Picture 1 (cartoon, rainbow, N blue to C red):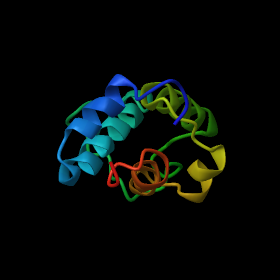
Picture 2 (picture 1 turned 90 degrees about the horizontal axis):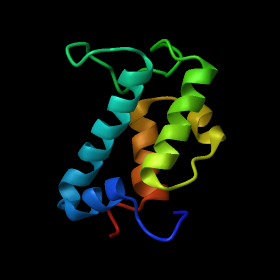
Picture 3 (picture 1 turned 135 degrees about the vertical axis):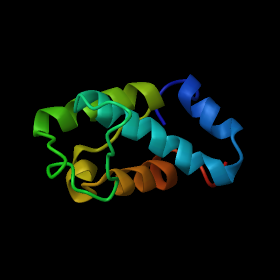
Picture 4 (picture 1 turned 90 degrees about the vertical axis):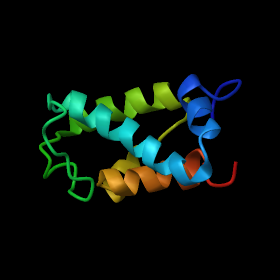
Amino acid sequence: MIGAGPTDAVQELLELPRSERREALEELVVEEFRTRLLMDDSEELPVTTSFFDLGCTSLVIADVKEELESTLGCAISANVLFNRPTIEQLVMYLADDVLRLSAS
């Protein structure tokens, strides 16, 4: 992670039992995509569908990346968003490789 310490969002994730952290992170990521795609809570956002099939443009993906970096206090490689182009894959990357939620 970058910065002096965990952000409030990361601290909240770390305070959860390990078994609940990934799901909470997924909710955070899904909410960011919902916001950018102008979706409301009643609309389903499939986490296994490609970002582009969801209607995201490169600009939307860049905006989501920037907001997640700010919220989570970490750098996210742009390559990851194209090599792991679903919310499910992005969450797995963030949880395991960036935030190491299962190791904390």
